[in-house]
Amino acid sequence: MTEHDDAEVFARLRSLWRAVDPVPAGLIDRMVAAVASDDLSHEYALLTLVEGPLGAVRGDADALTLQFSDGTTSILLHVTTTGSGRRRVDGWVDTATAEIVLTQGERSISKSPAETGRFVFDEVPPGLTRVRLTAGDGDETRTLATPQFEL
Image 1: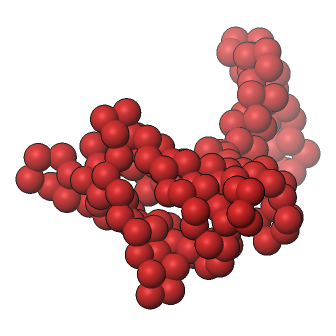
Image 2: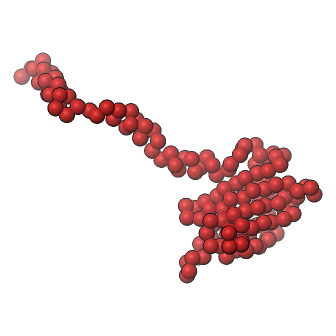
Image 3: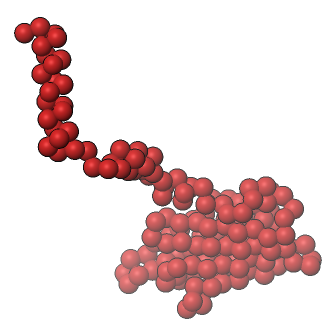
């Protein structure tokens, strides 16, 4: 058999399979979309780690919203500037939480959230801040610590 004969056999097989079992309509487009969107939820989570304009993290914006998650527990922080130039941090957690601690350098403030998961830190001075929550479900205790962020 020559290369010409092989090409002819493959062409006939190809036309046979196209007639007997054609490629479903739209399969190629669906496969391209599936490959393009693979792991998109992980990328979205990284992009929404800081919500709102990125300049607001270190800028003079009046409000800042941050969301942190470890996959099982999430914490949402909304920061506003008070009349005195300090910050008010309103927060919500989505799990049974024993304690929320806001830390700035050596200074720490501790709160216990309401049953709804809401908590507030009033009159917090601007500066590098970290929030740590301790969540407990029965005998298991977990800790979620945010990276430092600027208030």
